Amino acid sequence: MDKQALTKILDDLSHLDTKDGLDVNDLLHIPDDLRQLLTWMVREKRFMSDDLAEHMDLSSSDARELLAVLLRNGIISISEPDAPTEYRTRVTGTFKHKFKVQSDIWNLLDE
Image (tube, rainbow, N blue to C red; front, side):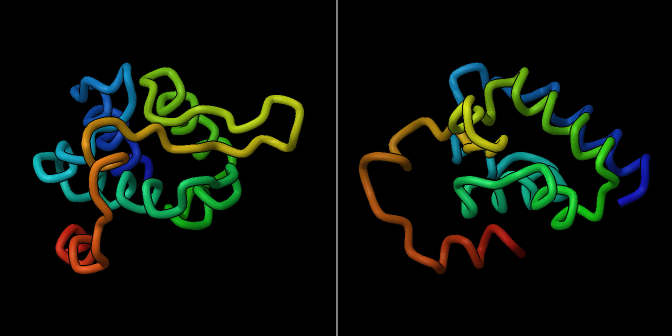
């Protein structure tokens, strides 16, 4: 991913109200690059910096920058402070507790 695309994702993140975590309903109303990133994170549930760097084709430093913004915005949290740094997506809303999502929804989000 080039620096311009990363800058756009970081800018788009600044417009989300995510202090309590990611509301998956927001995935329907955000730009494609950010939606694809957040959809991947929700699917993965837990991931490491290297996983993010590989998925997004980012350098290690760019991945750390993105992770810092995601942490600051409340979209992710660190799974276990004493273990190797693993991140967990914080999901809010009825999606998390009320119903099971079928795989078709993920296919629609990827389009």
